[in-house]
Length: 521
Image (tube, rainbow, N blue to C red; front, side, top):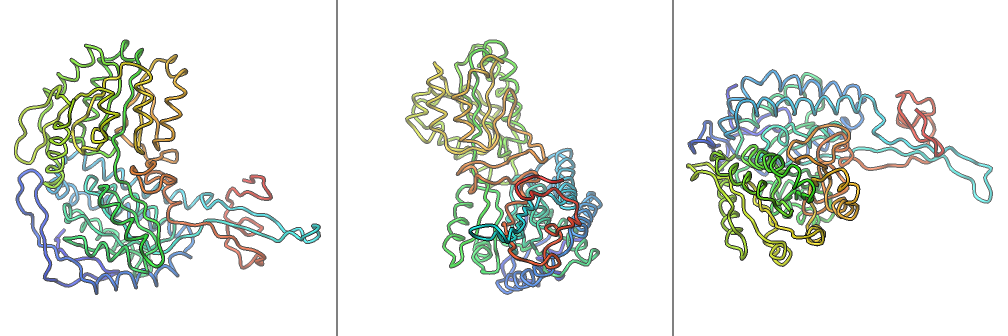
């Protein structure tokens, strides 16, 4: 595909602007062609105006037709694979299998949401039929279901150029819900974004969706993104990135005359707790798993285990030391992430009581050196800096001499995406207090596993209390993500013909519904 560097404004492309930038080869640091042109405020106004008009039509399109649209996007992205993979590899430094796998996940998400809306029960239809003769007050006919919010702004993540990007989970779930989407591309993988946006624009035309169903803007700074969030036509925001970035969007959205929800995934250290029996029985195997989990993808997964709690054994520590000493330097997604990792690791090492257990070979240019560090439970609970996220291939072991140390440490944690416990069957059965604490702290609690690897299905929760996400009641992965871009609406006293099909007496969609308090399928 011949990249042009122009934003997608509905069915059109933007013109050139004076604000330009280029993407960078993550491995060499060299600039990649072409020049990309930041969208203008006029481009933004047009995109939001088109999305606002499109919402009135797109939100009413029958689910079967919307499902076909999602599947067509998936088909176009798959067909663009020969263009996507080499560009994604250059911009991100990710290996070909990871790029191909992420494209499969992106396509799978789109098809998953297509299946969901085609089946239809996700709308949570509830019906309470009228009782006009009820005393002392007649009962009205009252029916409710979830309806789309309106145009959604989606900010692409830097660590997933496809699955959390232009056609990623936020876009797929918002489009499935009936919301037009305006994407703010990430400048680090602008070329990949343009290829995927072109696939979506082609699907919009082929499926005859209203213009404005999808737009994507390029932006070299933060001003246009802020303008997008504060525009009165935008009704919700999806974001994956840093705590600072997510917090800025949250504050901007809250300060609007009409505040809107921001669904931001921001910060998580994904603690791992190793109980004594598991440490004694399989400490070496757990350590090997941790090395693999921490260094996977250069530690650039939001579920990378950054804290490990336990009374360590000699086998456990020696295995960690060997694993991290032998770990090769890893290319990070872009220079900004590499700099933040180096600075975060330097700050962590400077804290009182923190020792380095092992680190890999000296890092090459554009590469990160994996490291494993250690501190005591007392140091951890007395120094909040030890719980800060260092995004990249490192982890901090916290030596806990007792169960009380673990419980105290668990209580001190901020909100997390995941929390993991390794233990014997007997230990897990008796770990009620720890598990109860972690249930309140994390969106996903894992037993005898590792947090990296997020299964995309109806049971997955990829969210958690602040600062893991801005809204711990939601998920950014799995079918539950569609609920974020909807709200419940009640219809009282409507004639049957005026009701949405999901609430009509004959149930023409054939979905599961709660009727007078009883589930009917």
